[in-house]
Length: 161
Ligand code: SF4
Image (cartoon, rainbow, N blue to C red):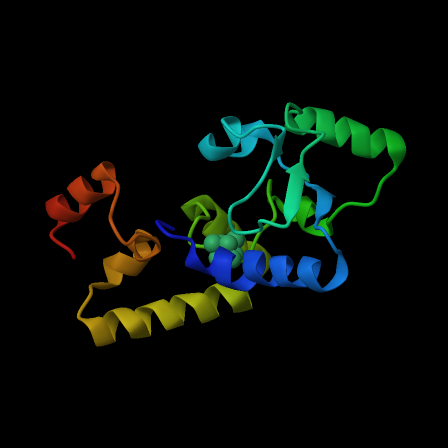
C-alpha cells in the first residue's frame, strides 16, 4: 500500500489512454470522492488534476457529504447502488487491495470465502518461498513495504519478519 503502483498501471494509465483516444483536449470527470474517506481525500480540493491523468480535470460534487447524506440521497431518489454494500462493505475498491483494512479482509471471508481463501493461500505460498512467517500473512504485514511504527513494534515483540 506504500506505493499503490497498480492504481497507476491498472487504472490511471488506461484512463489517460482512453481519454486521449476519445476526447480531444481532455475532459471533465465527476468523481464520487469524499473528504471522509481517507486522510489524503480530506485534504483534496473539490476540483483537481491528478498528475497521472494529465488530460482530465476531476471534480467531486459530494466532497463534503457524509455517508449518511449519501444513503439518504440514494433512498430518496431510489437510485441504484452496488449490492455489495448490503454485505457490510462501506467502500468499494479492488477486493484484494493492500490498502484494505484487516476488517475488510474478514468481511471478504464471510461474503466471498473462495476469494479470501485464494488470496490467503497465495500469500502463504509466497511467505514460505521468501522465508517469511505465517504471521506475516495473519497480521496483514504483506500489505506494507515499510511497516508503520505500531506494526514494526508488534513484529519485533512477536519476533517475526
Ligand atoms: S488493488 Fe488497491 S492500489 Fe491496486 S489498483 Fe486496486 S485500489 Fe488501486
